[in-house]
Length: 322
Picture 1 (cartoon, rainbow, N blue to C red):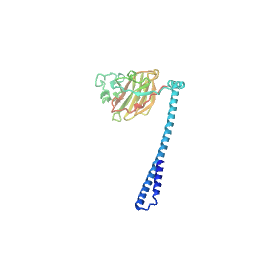
Picture 2: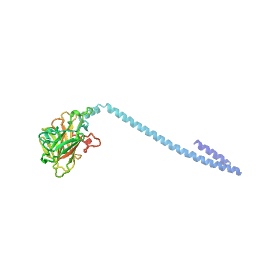
Picture 3: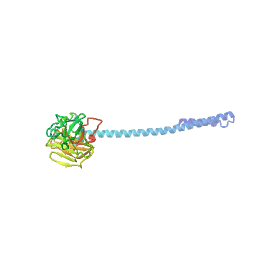
Picture 4: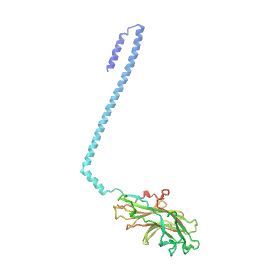
């Protein structure tokens, strides 16, 4: 405002020389009027900017005050909840009655095919463990590629002598092999797969099975003939299979904090689980095994990162016993 009064005073002074007719005086007066107008324009512009800036500052101060009030209310509310005995009781009740969802983890089983089982060998003489050929000229199985491949060498002398032969793994799926750092609330799954490689001769009668074995009274298998087999049951799950197929079998041990929960067994075929999970009545360690006749089989225990499982075992979930 003071600047506006000053410019008005200057204007009045210029008016005093309005009657001047001297050319030099008139030129001077015109120049002063231009400068006065420019000065007034700048002053008015700065005044408008100042008013706008003042409004923005006032609005910002109001926003800060509002946010401060809200923060204070939230802080006071939080302290009340922390000290509220009802809230504490509700929290403890939920922890007791709504336990966290258990998880299922895959544990690598360092394993391989180890030997021919006496119960299903090349012949009744059980000659394979010691000799390279069957004394009776029957078909035999050779374990190759460091325990990964079971190669069936069919008999050319006696086609009737090509029997199904069982090959067992070196180690069982055992609860004792669960790492100590695995949580007591975790289901642990051991898993392996078998890729069946049939004989190229379409007329060759072939068969392949994969499963878990304890003894003649306790075993679980899935077969290329489309059936499940146990010591007491035989159940069909599909028509007989042809061509290459990948079977998988898994054994799931329940968490340590669920000692009475059943051990579970499941099967997969070509990357998908087949049928329902089997719940066992007792907790037993089972031995992975295969049975082959006139076909080869390649097993996978997950030890080679370049050969992942066909089934996404990382996404498998146990049948939770709530």
